[in-house]
Structure formats: structure tokens, C-alpha cells
Image (cartoon, rainbow, N blue to C red; front, top):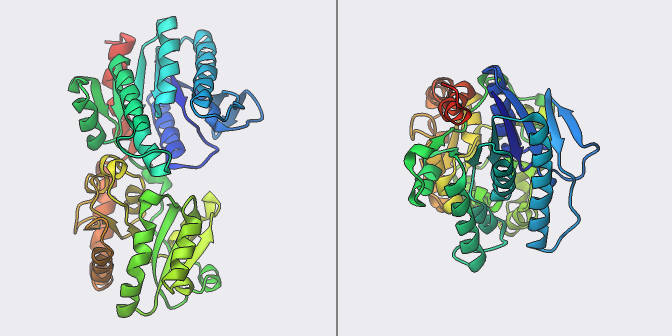
Length: 399
């Protein structure tokens, strides 16, 4: 079987989106399928029209110069449609598999219909909800409603829909899409690529001033929906019961300046360490410094519907964590078994959950073991990717 994937962006860029994409491609190839890969202009400026990265060959679409909203999106889709059509006409895939956002599936549909190739759409999050988090629109605005309608239009016209979790599947079915045309490909982890947590690097620990400290941490991108502001709000109460506590924030992103200002305003700047972004190969060294991870996501449509990768990665590494009880977390975390959930949006509940976990260190081994068993049995990429087989075979005419 030959599948042409259409991505917003890909490796070598680092994001949850690119890591999921690469994992899917490798596992599909392990099944004996041929995969080909086109990226949209949002990959940015690239050195060549084609590029090999980590054993995967990508057909790049040139970046566009337009910056005016709407004109920019139309230009992006026109450029992407031309690139998909060019590659598909040459390779003649059995199907075209477009991944979020909707700006990718509309060009894929046009190219696919012109060439007589089935098109499937994989939704990882709705474009309108992502725009709310980025602050470019608000729920129920005209732009939000138009984008929602555009997503629904596309969903009704593709040959099959894939999505990453049950929350998104329920939303898709509520738009009038027959349930049998929607398949969940759950977020998962490559067990072999995750080592169980190791001993802290003494030199790094000393350099960051964490010797003899209890460390609560987060590793990733600092987006508003991650709720890191809530974590900082909880720190004064945590310090009252755990004076040696430090917060380690590894990464960067749109909220970094706001978080630093908040730490200063709360008088906890010396207790919060911002490392900045670190090389991907160094991330595990920083994870090893953290006693307890925190995933305090705020409740909004995006976090209620979408399951994140981070808790799964934490379980694969045998790490303990607390997480807010948004829908995306509740679909992954078994409260009191693989992690601890707390009421979303409540600094007091977060403080109580962290304090409770720190007071129960003797039970952390049970959490680690349960989390590792869960990802090994249920959330590995081999199991997830196998769910593509039946819809793919039907569309490709394979018995």
C-alpha cells in the first residue's frame, strides 16, 4: 500500500505534532506500507525541495510571502494543492492522508478528487480551538463559527476520518459524521525510546541550585493552556509546607515573559528556575532533576477534547506526576493509580495534590510501575497504528 501523508510541518522541527507524525510513519513502514510525505509552507524556509530527515523523505512546499490574513491562508492552500498534485501524479498513491489543520485537507481534497485518489483526514485538534488559545479569536466569534463550519464541511467530504482520542471523536460524530467513518488512533509512545528515569546529574543539579531541594517541574512549550500560571500561583502555599521547594521550568514559548513577570510579582522569582530551551538530546538530564512533574492544564475546549503526549511520556519513563482533571487528562490518567488528578483551575487543589504526593513518597514505586504497565499494554505505537489497517484496506480496495 502507498500512502501520501500531508503534514502542517515535520521533523527536524520539534513539537508534539512532529513527534507523533514521525512515530506513525515509522510504524506504518514496519507494517510494510510505503509512505510519502508532503509538508505545507508552514515548514518555513527550506534548503531544498526535497529533504531526508532521520530516514524519512519529505517533499517540501515553498514558504509563501503573503502576510495578510485570509490572503495568506488562500496562498498557502494554493501552493500546497499544487505540491500535492505534483507529487501524487508522480507517485500514484493508493490514498492521500491529510493531517490537521483544515488548511491541509482542503488542498488534499481538491488534488485527490482531480486525480481520483481517496482522501482521509486526521484531526489532532480543531483549528478554531487552537486559534482561541493563540489569542487570534474567541469562542463563538464570527471567525470561530466560520472555521467550525469549514471543518465540518471537510469532514463530510473526506472518505474517512481519523482522530487522536474519544473526546474529539464524540465532537466529530456530533457534527453529523457517521460513527463508522471515524476511527481513533490514540496518542502513544515508543517504549524502546524511553529509558526509565535515572540518577540526577550532580553537576547540572549544582549549577541550577537544586542540591538538597524538592523539585516540581514541567518540560515543554509554555503555551497558555498548559496552566503554568496556575502552578506559580500555587507555589506560595507549597512553600509554606515545603520550604525547600523549587520549581523547574524547562523550555520556552509564548508565555515565558508573562511567567517570569508573575514569579517576580509573587515574590518567588528565586524559587523558580527557567532553563530556556534545551537540546532534545539533553532533555532527559533535566527530567532526572525533577521529583514530581506537574501538568496543570486549564479547562477549555482544546484541553477537554484533546489528549496530550506528556503524561504518556512520563509514564513510559517511570515518572510520577499530578495533572488537572481536564477531559484530555482523564482519558489517559487513572487517578490514584498512574497519576494524581486535581480540580482544573484551582491553585488550592493543585497545592493539595502536590503536597499529598510529596507526603506519600513511599507509594511512588506503585505509581511508576502502574504507569509503565499502562503504556506498554495499551498506549504503544504498534497497537495504535494497527487501527489504520481496516479503513485503509477498504479505501485501497484490498480484501
